Image 1 (cartoon, rainbow, N blue to C red):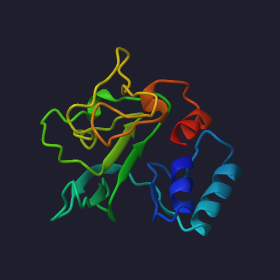
Image 2 (tube, rainbow, N blue to C red):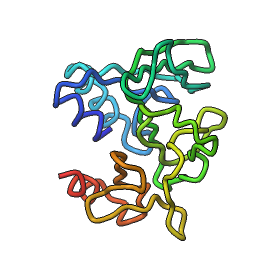
Image 3 (tube, helix red, strand yellow):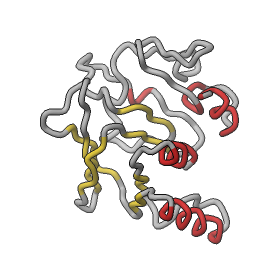
Length: 171
């Protein structure tokens, strides 16, 4: 939610795809409803009850001009999107997202953290992304991964898994 708000405030057309009928299900329903109203009023598109079946590159999409569509299990097609962030939960599951094919076919897919839901989580990171001994994405002091121009921050790095920590890392 935080990143969607930040990107939207910076002028990026932003959509949030929710697996359930509302966001922040562990919070009080009034808080969730108010958040949804505020995000919608700010121009964020909310897609509820949308379980992702797959993310597909669109025709003509490549590393310099990525474009994707999200197809939900109920057949909805969302997009096009230049970048797709996968986020869920508090425990980073980075191992399922490594591109073992070496194709680098997913240059616009930026992050995958949290609960995996195969088959759409495959090939999220380009090959060469190194993980540390605990399975988190290895980064340096500037959030650089082992792949040039690919950064990681937040829960996938395995440091203090708090939003303010991730915000501070992004500044």
